[in-house]
Amino acid sequence: MKQLGGSYFTKEEKQLWLISVLAILLSFILFDRTHWLTIAASLTGVTSLIYNAKGNPVGQALMVLFSLMYGMISYQERYYGEMITYLGMTMPMAVAALVAWLRNPFGENKSEVAVNRISRGEIIFACLLTCMVTVLFYFILKTFDTSYLLISSLSVTTSFLAVYLTWRRSPFFAVAYAANDLVLILLWCLAALDDLSCISVVVCFVAFFANDIYGFVNWRRMAKRQAEQMQDCVVWPERKKRTAD
Image (cartoon, rainbow, N blue to C red; front, top):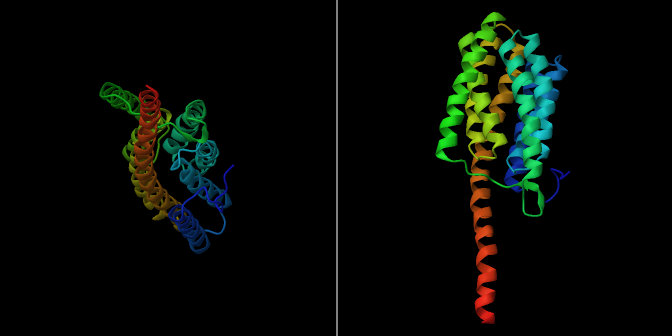
């Protein structure tokens, strides 16, 4: 596994990770100090995002672990929508994404997945599928008397689209996750009105939002670089042939 202290990560990426970790730790010290599962999940999640921003499968492995812990935290707060979403959807899809990323490395670089560009038809299909999943989960969550049903259903919408795009290796998975972060920030702010310890979870998702925005920017860079390298691989043999002729 590549280490955060090595040359694998840029100076900006190290700073983003460090600021995120410090913000999470500070909020835990100020507002919580008791829910150790929350701090463990937050640190695991923010570390997974910095790897995901690099297109590294390690990020998906950590996301599986984060989903398990976050599902348990959501259960404790009676956010059954979040629990069902992460344990029943995000975690299995993270496993599927991990397999897909491992099977589709960029060239010989096992630590970077090949960026995929999905068609307009698949985008329409993904949106329709997301709507169907949202409607299904709405009634499931309603049955469980989920707190803030509409917001929880919106979380399902953004989560499913995010995990689908992650599985398909599209840079826009980070945009969908950023949208999900905003929904979760609202959801946990409402929880913080009754329990100040939930502020640490709010800070966690604020850090996630910043990391997901960076992830999208970096995946766009990756897509451009990979396209240029693929073009060079095609053009160079042709140039070599012409020189020989």
